[in-house]
Amino acid sequence: MKKLLLSAFVLFTMGFGSSFAQTVDEEIKLIQEAFGKDKKALVEAYMNLSPEKAATFWPVYEAFETERKAIGKERILIINEYIEKFTHIGDAEAENLAVRSLKNDAALNKLYSSYFSKFKKATSAVDAAKFIQIEFYITNTIRNAIQQGLPFIGEI
Image (tube, rainbow, N blue to C red; front, side, top):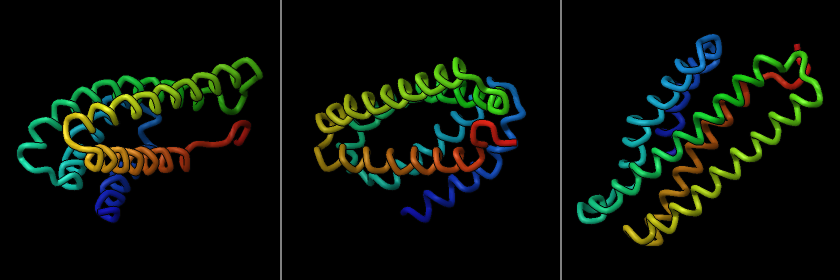
């Protein structure tokens, strides 16, 4: 399963670096499209839920995705701002971007905690843990790919 997930996201992330030249709205649309439909198919294959559990799981998943996408949109905005400023970033900009990034990570972790309980109630603790596990894997794979394409502060 990990190879399948990694292959799917390698295909997506190969085009990610060039998308930085696009507008913010185009980037957000590209990323959310890539992590909407394709991600759901990956989650569905991994979760392999019975029809009864699927009926209660997917409405919770859709609500989760709506909230996750809002957090993801903010993360993209932070990344775009960083890309615009990384060669000449000062103390105020560095602090602003760092604080916003930390708050964004905290919001995502809070979302995971909140939805773990909801998924557990809708299905089971094992299924909720499986979902969190696959979500962490997908998120970390994407973040890794993005991070590899981002320059360090002051790097030319």
